[in-house]
Length: 320
Image 1 (cartoon, rainbow, N blue to C red):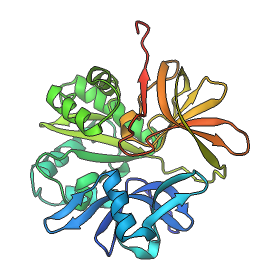
Image 2: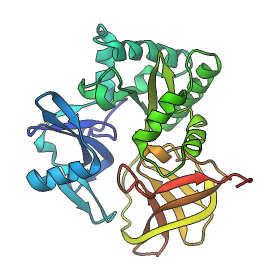
Image 3: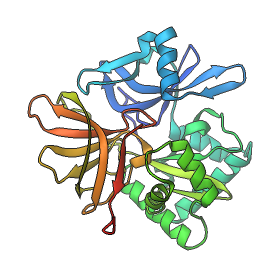
Image 4: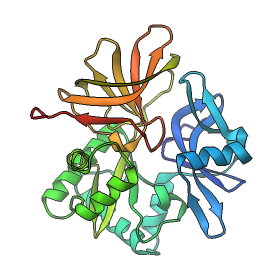
């Protein structure tokens, strides 16, 4: 997997600053010359400590306001770090190679070392894989998940198919009730548990190996962020409509094209609703409305915060 030499940062990378802050990269291109990102971990006496959206924003506002950023293009607030302030760039594919080459330091790494050959056996190209999340900065615990990156849309869907086949063959397993409920509670979503688990079980972007949950997230290395449209927020909206195109539903951010006169698409910035709906399905969706300043065409944003409070996508079955 090749990176651009002039801007080597990709979503799901981590960047570390001298202040002991680790940000997750969220944008493909530079934001006013900076790396678009969001604060995820802070250094503490016991090591890296994970922080939520509100705590991250509060910490930066009080101590590091220079990392707060508001995009005029997207009318959205997130974080941004100048490349010269980065002391370490944690790259998923490099860390995965290191973890596979050495002895396992704990059970999570041992399961990772068992998982990757399984994915390769079912068709994944190992050169298109990386590891993110806690493993990327060596702060995993016994209860940690394994978070994988797959570079490229075609490779990602090949890996999803491989997971489905491995589950069918009994090599991997779907999330049981305990792990699914844990996933449900972590996500703090707006759906009921039954609705949440129904959607999750058909995505095949996560499964279980030896009792540990793993998931895969896609990074499209062909993306070029050259969109110059400007959007303005217009409040919130809940609507029922049909999905007319789901080809970007597992991207970051995920996109769903809609059959609607004003709201042409849903843009998803939270993993909870990635891969949530398929072409032809009827959905109920709630999110923040953004209007294209030039055309007046609208879109809905689901995941305006990581927790996506009040925002969701739900497939409406015929019997509902």
